[in-house]
Length: 175
Image (tube, rainbow, N blue to C red; front, top):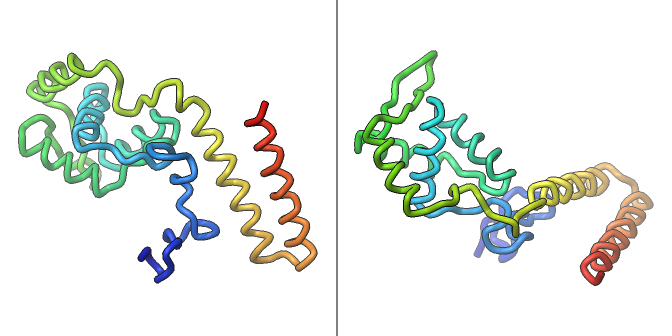
């Protein structure tokens, strides 16, 4: 059973739904294999040194918001890369900043020979998904505002608007 004791509850997301799942497997909140995280970190660090939070944001930005790596995947991978001598971490202004080593560049060269696409590249199938996801999240947030603060009439009107929006979206698919 999911968090909250309800079989369909997925954390604190609006309406209790995990929005990433709305776009199918691998869309929105994509989970990457360990090798993808490793390669992604090496590729980004080959451009410039960064700390973990910056790395997470960079991967999110490069994927158009479709890959949002968590600290639980980034920091252990950085530690592993550091243990292997592929990156070096140093404290700067209270943050641990990582940079790629010569050994890391050699590892990256080998990895990029085997895979042409960057780990954050979802190809043509994902074009526009970041914008669609963001628009959907904003719509859900607006509906939740009405659910929390609106009158009964406002909630009913909003439900009608959402039903009409759903019909129009299916019309787009039918074209």
